[in-house]
Amino acid sequence: MKTLTKEMQAAITPSEALNILKEGNRRFMNNLKANRNLLQQANETSDGQHPFAVILSCIDSRTSAELIFDQGLGDVFSVRIAGNIINEDILGSMEFGCKVAGSKIIVVLGHTKCGAVKGACDHVEMGNLTALISKIQPAVYDEKTVTDEEKRNSSNSEFVEKVSTINVKRSVHAIMERSPILKEMIQAGTIGIVGGTHDITTGEVSFLDDTLVMN
Image (tube, rainbow, N blue to C red; front, side, top):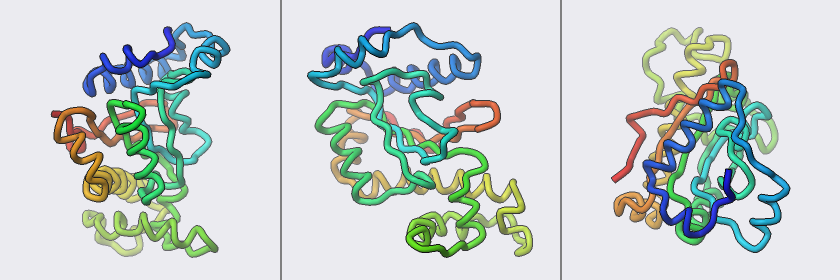
């Protein structure tokens, strides 16, 4: 597996970038790895990096983007925060990754059994976590299919996963709504954006078709 150069990165389309991630996830699910020399990649990227994707995922220890998409050093910008939420620092990081460094796709990746989402479902308040969870809370209120109040909490796994999916969709929407730079790049077809969910039991990443914006 070759280390990405500026020329290789420039030649990748948003659609191809998504396919690279899908192929990498298939390898991960089959317990396979692309043949790469990480030490060599470290040396080859020491003077510059040219990642093809920006991946926003949760801090959950089971959801490392590089592992579940079988990518090496210099391949992806990995942005991680509990609940894969959006704030201005993350937006700035994404703008750097795409506008300055040339990445071709943004992925917002939620996952099953997410503790931050469970906390939001249970309206947890604890120190600085309170403000973070409040950013996930709108996804809880947006979930309308579970009407029994006693089942609208983390003890109902189906409710948790529905909220998690809504949270991913809200993050995708927030990126385009709050970053004129990224919105313009998406509309121009320079980059693409998509949301997805990582099943921590099987390793499979399911991309959400209704979040995919790729011109």
